[in-house]
Image (tube, rainbow, N blue to C red; front, side, top):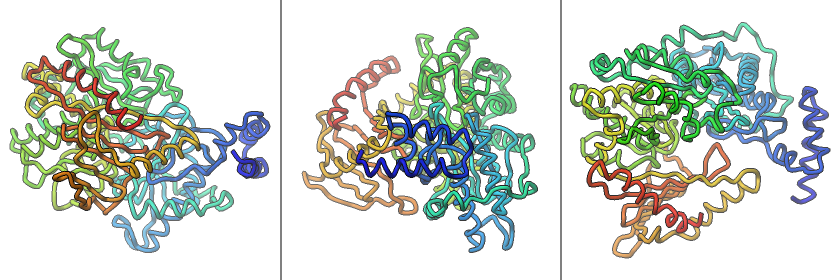
Length: 592
């Protein structure tokens, strides 16, 4: 780092020593400034933690590039400015002329979560905005539900989802209960960027803050129950043996309650992980995608001879599902497979019960399994592809509201949204629905695993694998940006020995297709005509590769969809191994 840059960082840090900050924060900043190794100081102050389209997410600690109550307050002031500005301009659908702007504020189990949520509530109230503050930790999808249920214009949930314990975050929501999209995302970001610490209003009217809790829980639980497709299946298999873990998070009460409301009676919880703890002491990382996080659940499942083991992440928006294979071993169903099973079950069982209508549709994201596309197309059901993130699924619902009926949508990242009362991924409804699917399978003499294999036999097998390349800090962000530049400047023409025949660039909105050895270009049209920094490659052998920098974490993600031959259910493991064996060659072609 150049001396001038370090001097500027030192000057920024000095403003925290000179400013109106608490003594503990000042002591931590001073220690970083006096340390011989300035790495921590640089990472903490080299920039202001960016308020992106989803809000904030970062490591907790003092500094402009960290999650702390000062950065939270500053971001909230900008968000409040924008909420009030839209009200003055008459831009809400849910607010009567001259009405008062209101928001819902929640938090999960993470360290400082309550402190940050109360900071948000205080700043909002100081700006004349009515606040509905949850009494204690609640799932992200319940915050989304409450915004719609109470007719609010926005909301904030303090969460870093499934990130490691060092992180916290801030998700901003709009009046339809979805995370903010354009033009409001840019409007909020612009307002946040204008705010200085001295502009932040605090000490607002406490009468503007209403504490909410049990009644909202009940209404939310009833909304989750509306997702049920076939109650008879559950009544016949009410003793389905279920093990559930909240991974120390917000699902600990609401999810067992929802399961019982559906009719399931044989529910067991992992006691060590029912303890609310932002340090997540029983796992390396509270991410249900990682098999390590499911170890205690599987151990209990073995002891109790359970049919399946299910987890929700700390803010209870995403899930993990573990079931028994044909060798009676526990296997984790990946996010693509989960989404595939949901869509398959919804289509087939709604058709069987005469509930399917021509106006109904499903949604997946562009990096989610193409097997789902084959299922929908063959069944004659409308399926749309949207950008990564449930805010884009919510946007599709918004666009078609009143014209078509949404019946489900999901993505590869272990999340599903089975109804439109919530506009974010929702583990309580997803967990209840997967238990219904498991009950259906059991009623027909199958395990959930066998149900999955039957889908592959009907629609073809492919293996989905995600590779994360992590590059933390300032240099890491620059390296990730350069990787995307290199891919665009030097187009990939072959992957693992197969010819690339189609390239989609969602940032440039261009699709290039190889026809008779000539590249032909066409325009990609997406909802809102929005852009996304994603590249996709399709080969003549059926490979699909997607490349996308994460919007919330210091990494670039590579999504592989690899077909393989599966002539019978017994071939599943061999087909999986054959597909996985191709991963090194695919990575080599991408230079990772």
